[in-house]
Image (cartoon, rainbow, N blue to C red; front, side, top):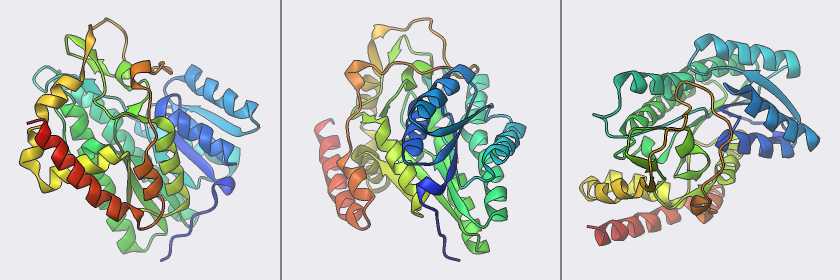
Length: 330
């Protein structure tokens, strides 16, 4: 069955984790293009701030306070969206958090909580969205993975595991819906490092503050990719040429990719001693300022990838460049 997605200006879009970072950027951009947005997350104050911003620009936004790790909360998100807007056309499972530290350092209780949010939150949201989208004749489900969905990295091993799980679940669900003939587009978005409050939200077991390894991209680049997928059925999308290159290098030259571990260790360790600040693993976090040293860049690759056919040639060039880059750091 051919999948037909509505123009964004005719859509109602649910976004989890909408109070900060990628979720907030996506909500703002979707509303600016005419979509009605449902902002879901744990932090009511942060969600309300985003909603007020949208409404001040003439947009329409609904706030639903919810914990994506709780199955029943997804039904409540859907119920409130239906009561306010009458339907949902695109569902974006974006909520997520990370932990920095070696796998031996990170307590198992923290790893389980990470899976509750990053993996089970996607599962619950996906099942809720699919049931609704089937009943109304189709739509888009967009799950946010990561470059580490394809290639794990040290010091964020538990996070890498959750994003591997999200990829596996999303790919299997897509195939099952295709076999069934359900008119639902299922997309996995795989960003590289993104300039948000990501490191401030993360739990940290290192002796220094965490930082993201370069290059770091702007959150609006991810938002553009998400909204492209809301209007165009695509299987998956990388955000940032670095994400595409790291994935390809890990798949084609895994041994060489492993040798990058030292560089990844060094470039996730900041220069400041670890502080005692709060994180968002168990409690809601608000919008954190972006480190001015890690302000995001634009991605020419992502812009090209949103035009059919351009990503193939670009991908080949990126693989070669990534291999040379890794060899120089051996």
